[in-house]
Amino acid sequence: MSQAARPIRVYHSPRYEADIGEHVMPIRKFGMVRRAIEAEGLPIEIIAPTPVTDTDLLRVHTPEYVRAIATGEPRALAQSQKFPWSPELAEAVRWTNGGCIAALFAALEDGVAGNLASGFHHSHADHGQGYCTFNGLVVALDRAQAEGRLARALILDMDLHYGNGTASLLATRPSFHQLSIYGNWYKQNLAYRDVAAERTPDTKNAWSVPVANGAGREEYLGILAETLGPAIDRARPDVLLYQAGADPYKEDPYSPLDLDHAALRARDTYVFETAKRLGTPVMWVLAGGYTKDTSKVVEVHLNTARAAVDVFR
Ligand SMILES: [Zn+2]
Image 1 (cartoon, rainbow, N blue to C red):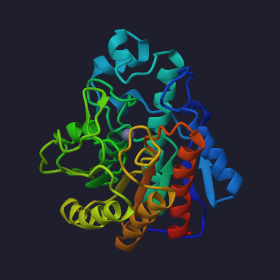
Image 2 (cartoon, helix red, strand yellow; image 1 turned 135 degrees about the horizontal axis):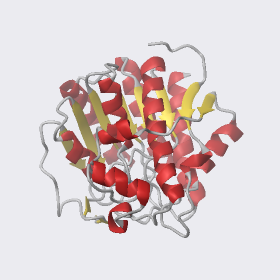
Image 3 (cartoon, rainbow, N blue to C red; image 1 turned 90 degrees about the vertical axis):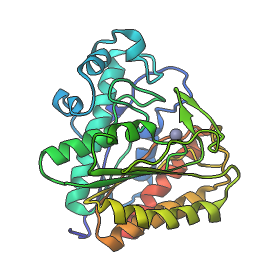
Image 4 (cartoon, rainbow, N blue to C red; image 1 turned 180 degrees about the vertical axis):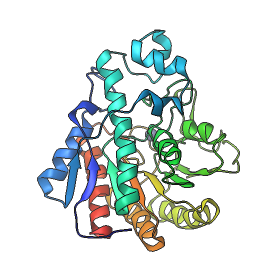
């Protein structure tokens, strides 16, 4: 793995955004994070990916669902992720998933890379959920595995919400693993806060660790430190996919946790340092963030890019 001083490759295109009107999901944030990275002059090269193909999508998603997103019909299925469907949206989700694939390949070559979009961890094989249309994490892993570029992988999901869609897709992918550290349960397209009320039993390759209401920096980082090592030991990954959610932030309307910007940046630094120490390539994605002041969401995501630069450059 090369750790030369070339800029870190990060993927983004203005095509990631579609007009979804007034919406709790600030889809504009993708471009805002890009501009923040550029304004700061970080050693990051921002590259446009190519949109994902049907071949890539159909390894993960059913033909009926892929067709619904392409055509808008049946409308209930085309809007199962809770976005208003439009031809522009159908295109945008292909670009964001293409970015996941491009970033994964760049990470395998360079040791680290990112995509300025989510991993879309609530997306299932035959429907979307929670603003997640196609599961870019698994789409990228399946593509890389099909090309023989990797055999095994670990997804570290640190979005506030449990990565239920990814877990469902991993049931048939025993060489891919997930560790989801979450402070908000997720079910039936609704966010719950009480992580103790509903908990999916761990499977052989999908593990989850709830974080208690009110948990602060010490407890959160302690859970990460205690669980990431054993997860890596069991997964023996060729790559780490890091879903760096902004929604654990303390002002996020869905978050019951007491985590400030510094705590989340410390989380990011720990993940990148662990990957670097083990020589495991790491690809990060942005994931959720709904704080009313979008600049605070952007700050969390910018801090993840800063942490990657601090550790790798
Ligand atoms: Zn979330």
